[in-house]
Image (cartoon, rainbow, N blue to C red; front, side, top):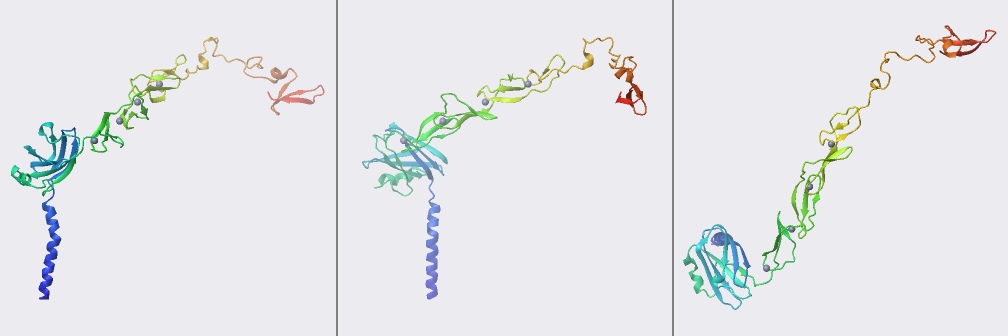
Length: 315
Ligand SMILES: [Zn+2]
Ligand SMILES: [Zn+2]
Ligand SMILES: [Zn+2]
Ligand SMILES: [Zn+2]
């Protein structure tokens, strides 16, 4: 008896544990990511994702409690993203006030029959609810969002994209680093028009360097010292990159001086003391007739009248 009771409690516990899981699994909403924008007093755009092909019914409830009914079965809804435009002809929207809506998924028109007779068609089983916002002037206090070319803000009330525009820089100013240039948008501060520097190919140069100027941003690029080419004694080397003449003339070798008597370069000039020009400078030639060479001393000597050495010098 006691055991049976425990078994019963155990089974009940299991059922209650599994039940919510089973319900949620069965009722995963087909319609998700519902968004609604009010485009004017009479028009709105409704978007959503659907996990099945089928139809939707949309119930509108205005601020007076009046219901409107929109059945989307013409082309149906498809798996994925769907957009439904509520037009003036639908006569579902008017005035500035907002509307409550409920979106129901069905696989055929019959699935919506119960909504027609419902006392509260906004709260039937399977309702995915949102509001059609009241008509307002969209404004944003938020920061800009942007992509490569445009910026925009989202309306504080309806999340609609507003102030959508292309990036611009009125003064056409460019920023740059060693490889790229770009502009900064006046409105959203985004960097745009980013690309690598480009050159017309024209080189500029000074005495030591050459460089090019980016056509877009005026940044100096490809700067380097002149190089290559061959200097001669009369012309400077021409840089192989930019063609500019640079550097020094080739220095002239002394033997090639054409102004100095070319007839006797083979005859070396005599030592000024080598009076005979015989290649040997004697002590007499260098110091005077009283001087003579002393082999032992390896020096030039001069003696006084009594024969005492009074001076020596090397030859
Ligand atoms: Zn808005
Ligand atoms: Zn911008
Ligand atoms: Zn540039
Ligand atoms: Zn150069």
